[in-house]
Image (tube, rainbow, N blue to C red; front, side, top):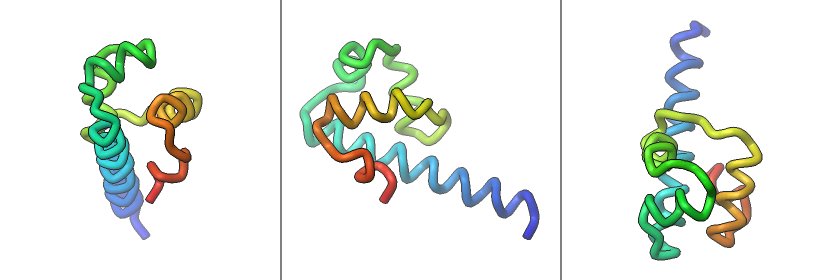
Length: 77
């Protein structure tokens, strides 16, 4: 398989990951700005993650799950 195939597959997973975070954020009735403040990051960081344009480090993902009160695996579906 080509490296382009793997890049596309990674990009799709990253988009799905971001979409799942956005769904949980909305369920918790947080704006991007509110979530960013709770996490100590910028609203732009939240936007980039939710749009699949930035992959956060594991510790930030764990903190997002904690703030949104969900199991970290919810983001991986």
